[in-house]
Amino acid sequence: MAVEIGLWSVVAEPEALALAGPGATLLTGADAAYAVGPDAVVVIAPGGGADEMVLPGPFPELLEERLAGVLRPAVRAFARLPQGCLALGVARSAELGYRRGALHDIRLRFEEALPPGLLEPGPEWLDMVGHDPTGAMERFITAWYSGVPARRVPDVDPMGQPTALRAFHRVAAGRPEVYGISSRILPEPLADRPDGLITFGHEGDGMFTLAMPPGEDDPEVFYDGLSDRLLPERERLAGFLLNAALARAAMDGPLGGMAFVDRPQAQRIIAPLRRVPLRPMRWPCLFSRCYAGPGTVVLLGEDDADWCEMYVGVRHPGLLRRLRRLGLDWESFTDS
Image (cartoon, rainbow, N blue to C red):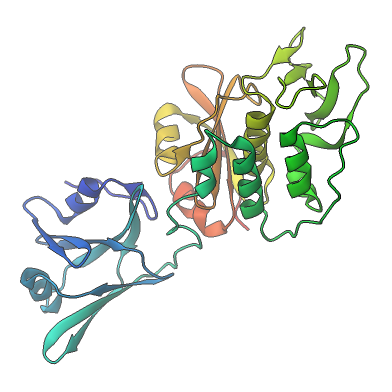
């Protein structure tokens, strides 16, 4: 028996085709793949619209025969993306369009409209992280907070701020959400420490402050308050600021939730996403990693071997439907 695949999950092509059932016939058409089984037809094709997919001909004869018959099978559709096949669900209708007696196109319509952004190939900033984390941070913030216009500010540097921090302030200008709630980057760094370090941020409730040495373009980042000594972060400032921006999107946004999950649940949640290629942060958990996909950021924190602390932020409420169906015990969940 085929395993059910959740709406808007991303799976490998063989897993999608298997939904047609044992003994299904595998076929190909114009940029599409089909599996025709006794009770179901699976369609994998590029792209689609918000609530429909139009398949161009020519089509295999067996596919036309099944869809034109009186006992029409269920049609399960998937959009082909670079990272896999996006489940669009079971079509509520399949309209066959003929021209001059030949099947010209098939129009599949769906009950639930696709949330904006899901058919995008993936956040392009992810490909920049390894060689330009500051540029990746700027692109992520610009895209995630695109509904909040930035305010132009002079590029002043009274304290010799590092390049990444100047870039952060430029893209955050006029967007107070970017500075954060759970952890906050200060609008202006403070030279207020007896050890000579510069304070540039703090935890929302004052548990720790964030400090860096002056005079370096990509300095180390230290937590003051997480331990009985200064605790160095794993990434230097440029990588840390990207990690921190992602964490704030997952933890502080208006849409999303927080839950404690076991490892199998965690894998199901992050399966459609890409891991951000940075070393894990030391807060909010000892090993806190970020995962991202179109319109979605997940922060997964590990303190022990069995359970993870998970935060999810999305840009559209429809992106939470898949998570709602997983039956998690949410500590908080906001979808409107």
